[in-house]
Length: 386
Image (cartoon, rainbow, N blue to C red; front, side, top):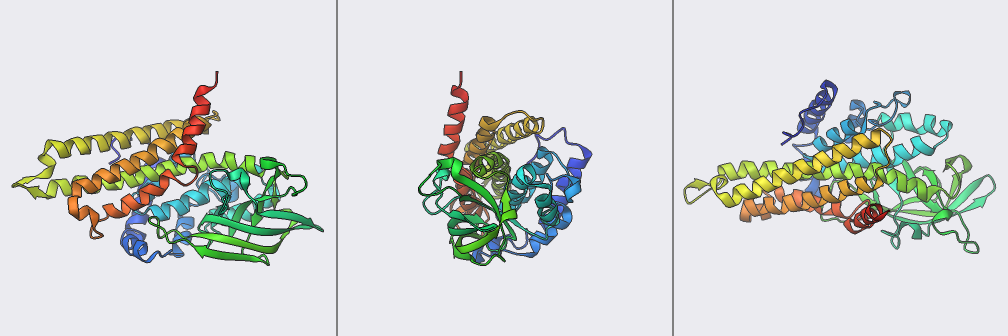
């Protein structure tokens, strides 16, 4: 269901068609099994890179496609409508590590890392949260201390998407000292790679949804990090992270819309086939009302997202509106998938049909990259300014 998209360019239509062809051949036949096995398919990174889908927002000088945010979000929704696990890998890579490096990295850092990331030779990840630092991201305790011309890093990062396969991780690490704590101003951004001595992958989370996207802890044991891996200015990492999360939250909104759209399409198809009392249930007003509300919410979420994305492309400050997108789209995904299961009845509760997977995948969109409660705080502060 994309009936509200009437103003697409030929380029945008071509990118949607490319994303659809990719997911139909490389993802759809395997998505349910990947979910059951909690299996990440590494070849997807190469395929997405070959299509340009891992550098959609990067300039062509770094082998990116140089596209606007709306076009990227259209492709991301298309992928999410087939497999949200693949979409979150694509979303995190395109938004957090690549955009942070592009915005704040040195030219040497950008030349070294961005082109391989755009080509799919290196998968990107982002490490901010820790076991004891979630919504309060400024409370990170993973610490770096100076050592000659480099840094020694010790600590643990949690909830790292793609952490098992990432070749580049942008990590937020505390560079102040216990004797001189600086709060959020004591956090710096570093480029980490798995080849650094002391780098380790810890516990892999056994998740309810997004099971084909590995989420892990990263453990740094006296890990030596070269001086040229510091991104931007020391102590500015928290600010860089918060700005980069705007891109990430737009991506989660698009992902949420894709999940909701998939659930709606499945419920609509089922309602036209399933008969009760000799009549397709799609002819019952109660079911029609549910489908009507599902379609309306999806259309509203997408319209909000694309309006805000276009404003961000124009350089407008839209942090509050970005949070509105993430909040409304994620809650739409949860609402739509819940009602999709209700339309399926008992069949919606079993794995023979995909709506139970959509339901499980939807829930985390209300949690990661800022919970719904955090989004309401951001929105509340924005609308309360005089």
